[in-house]
Every structure is written in C-alpha cells, then in structure tokens.
Length: 353
Image (cartoon, rainbow, N blue to C red):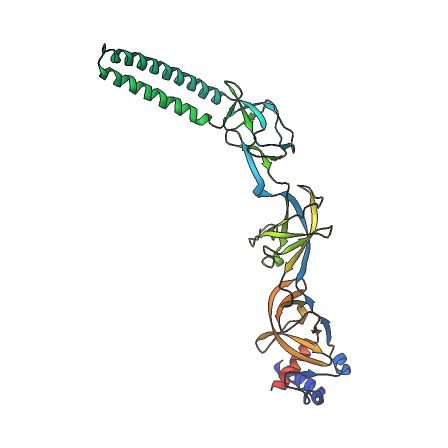
C-alpha cells in the first residue's frame, strides 16, 4: 500500500514538476488543466463571527429566577380563592383563605397563655401594693415574678409561629402575595385540603421569558453563555446557560436563553430556534470539514491563490454539522481546497522528499 502511495505521489509530482520548480518549496503551482485532472475544487471560507450551528425545537418558559413559591403554613382546607390563574397581583394582596385546626389550636393556646399572663400580672401587682404598704415581706414577690416570666415565655412560644400570618378569625388565616407579579396557573378548588409548607402556586415577578432548548449531542460543548440563538421573527436572544451534561435518554443537553422582548411568544409555547456560536470576527473562519487535513503532524488547509496551493497550519476550535471553525492565517473569503486534498498532500510529501 505504501509503495502504491509513493508511486502515485511521484507520478503526481512529475505531472506538475515544471510548475513546482519555479516556486518556493511550500507552494504547489498547478495549471487549470492539472487542477481539473486531479479533481481539486475550492470554496471560500466564511466569517465565523456569528455561525449558525443547528435549527432545533425549543419550549418557552418563564424566567425561573423570578419565581416565588406560595406555601401554606398550616394544614387545612381552602375556604376561599381570591385570585384567578395568571392574574396580575400586588404585594400583600390576599390570595387564599384557609381554615386550619392547627391554626385554631395555636390561637386557643395563645389565648390561654395570655389569660395566664394577665392573671399573673394582676397577682404580682396586688402583692406589690401590700409590700409597698409594709403589710407583706418583699420575698413574697419572688414566686409571683417567676409566674409572670413563665406566662410571658408561654405567650411568646405561641405567638412566634403566628408572626407574618394574617388572621381571618380564630380558625382561619389569609395567604397573601409576598411580591407583585403574575400568579402562575394553579388547579385549586374550594374545599380542597392543603398540606403545610407545600407550594400550592407561584408568583412570577417578571414578564421576561426564557427558551429551553435541548442541544443535540454533537453540538454539546460548542455553545456557551454569551452565544446567541435566533427566533422566527429574526430577533436574537442571548444564551444564559449551556449545560454539558448529556441526558442518556434524549442524547442531548439543556440550554437556556433569553427571549427578546416583544417576541409574541408565551409560556408553554413550542417554537424553533437557530443555535449560533459567537467568535471574534477576523480571527476565526468557518470551512467545510472536508477542507481539513493532517499534514506533517499538524492540522492544515490548502489555501488557493490563482493556481497556487499553500498548506496553512490551523487550529480547529469547533465543529458543527459539515463545518469546522478554524483559527490561523486564513481570512473570511479566502479560497481553500475541499476536494483533491489527498492528491495535494501526495504532491507535498513527494516534494519534501
């Protein structure tokens, strides 16, 4: 096999020998007839300043960082729903009314503790008057002060879990909005039981949207935060995050990008987006992968100028379907060979020998 390759290389070298002798050793000069006979074609390299990688489906979602969960502090039953799904609300606005046995027990406990505190204070006050009039010893105040302190501690114990909760009566309380925004869709009904500390709905404090995109396995790692995706209306959104963790079931990774304001898209909607990769204009270009070849242990392309072909060492910085992004002494618009590279390599190796 090696002998055949050498024979071919020598034959190709003899074919172009007159032209090669007239130029520097790195340059291969061919006539149009020789280029056609060897099956060599070239194409212009493209700017990789904004390179489209793929057109993929995406789901529109609300911005997760704007989400505030609404939880129920005490187990109970919904007795009233004050808002509608997706309704705009203000901070402090009442959302639900809940009747709760636990809430009732705490309130009864608080009332009992407050009664004990009041009785302890009355007893202390009366005994203090007797001590002040000299009718009783001062030491009699010690146990009464202790009773007041115990009763006060009990009141604080029952009052603490009620802080921040708006009372709707002895056995009912209001659930209010912690911030202004829009109530998420919810499926709640009057008479429904609700569990403590479990989110029953949420509030989105922003109208901004994200696009959730499943990036194909072959593009994972090529897109990062700061790159852009294109939408159907011609607008672009910036990539917020791009995971490199591939789901073994879908063979894809999650990408999240901002949706441009005024896009007309809505949460839950499915759409198509174009994934693009940003690069520094003038420093990287895009060429067909068929233009890449290993030469002298390095990655090269053959740069074409008129009838001359020069091997140029490049660094491959990314790959997409059918294209490679390269950095080196190649500018956008430069012609690079995309077919006949084996013939050019054979000529180059034959000349080197």
